[in-house]
Length: 394
Image 1 (spheres, helix red, strand yellow):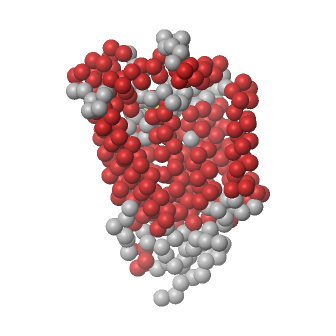
Image 2: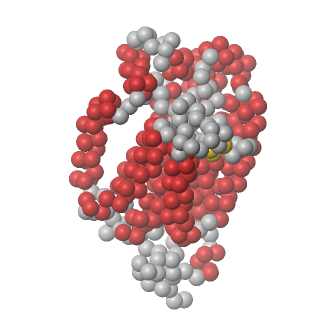
Image 3: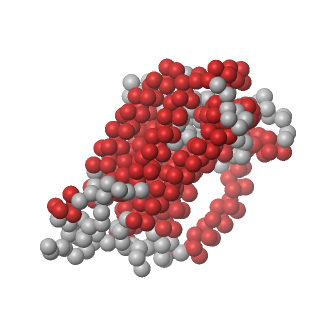
């Protein structure tokens, strides 16, 4: 059968019906799917300990999320490449919408001082979750068209794709979500072939600017959270009843789990007695550790590790640049989000309001995570086609 050679104008040419129908059902992407399912079920059970009514809603969100994953699996990577710029523009428009001061509070209701959610009636929608998906797809599409960013100027457009949504999310303000874009961006450009001599100076500059950002960018309450975690690491309890209350209580509950955890009633009593804020959301890992102990925590770590390894395996088996970079972006985003959330729960990082993927309560986060899982499945089950090539082979 004849196949059309790859050209910039014929990017999506060169496949026939047979190659599109031949799906690879034995793919490492299934590991990510089942890891995500187990994490989601653990999350629902943890939410049910103190918020059974929210656990029921989370169960509904889970079913919808799996539906999103199935739908995403049915969409071939070629269609994702075409849609990527439009999804990115839509995400930017929604990020701008929540920042408009004249939008009624009934539509954009501030929470903890952040304008980050759109009220849809039955549920709230967080545009930053869509922005994560759009960023991964759009950046992957750009680099697959341009090839390896071996020159410094080749990183100008990717940096713009990074900084525009990050700036909008910081203005909400949602610093925690904004920070997740950076490790994702770094992993994606490295796998695309960026030179370490270009990446290393940027990392060094970021490290130098951190102290400047502490005083010039962060708000007083954000600086106070960093002060609290520094004091906590030193064993200084001065912030335990103030800005560090949430962190101290989370650590106490994690420690109360011991090796094998507590029964459900004892766990509920401990969580309620300690008055842990956001125990069903940002601090869900503290509840899991209290309920299932160190063994349960290790199971959670293993699931996230399996998801990340699955994403890397999908990237290795992918033969076109777009699929390769998307798979790495998905794995690095969700793994980095896990590290930040659990790090702040066990007292290693300041509280940032970052949710735990698949486990924290919330429709937007859960649906976004499952959509990313579906995209990974879509890449994993489809074999390489003759009309695609990896622009990073060189």
